[in-house]
Length: 211
Ligand code: ADP
Ligand code: 5GP
Image (cartoon, rainbow, N blue to C red; front, side):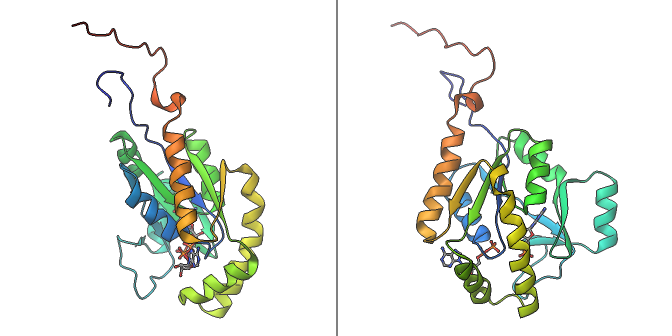
């Protein structure tokens, strides 16, 4: 909080969506490393961990019974079935971060993104696009984490996901990684500067101290 003028750094959810392989994970990391008070949300999923993934770091790996129980008790801020598995954002963590004045970055699919907009109207929704279908396919293969069948499923889903782009607030093309990172940081930084986010209704400038 700026002591003299009563301007708070606003905290809001930043949703980053886009087709699998577009670069969401790397760009969300860059965003959190570059701006203060930005934290990466850790989702829960029923998908099995990849060899390099640890529970509680990339995801919370839950079985389907646990996941369904969390849905029933309202423990998820949003959830969706993506590529045949369940994914969701733990609600209590998100609410605690926002209450502590931190913006949470959610790397989630478009179904989840639209749910977040309903539950948290202050959310900023950013869509990442690859420069071409060919580049997307090359990145999915280059990442080396998914079998061919899974890659094909993700490419089919991508065609549906991109249709939701017009409902997002901002779109960034991830061609060169460094440039896309600057674009994402700029979009979020700009949004943080909006007067509508920085000042409370009825704001008045403080009297100037004399002498
Ligand atoms: P997502 O989280 O959207 O599925 P990742 O962040 O895992 O995607 O990125 C997929 C792969 O593409 C990774 O190997 C990543 O290093 C690579 N990648 C990301 N952005 C670029 C880029 N601009 N140019 C080339 N490769 C990229
Ligand atoms: P992956 O299996 O590659 O880690 O993620 C697959 C997809 O699930 C990505 O599009 C990712 O954004 C999405 N995803 C990850 N976590 C969540 C979540 O908590 N909610 C929703 N709706 N989607 C998620």
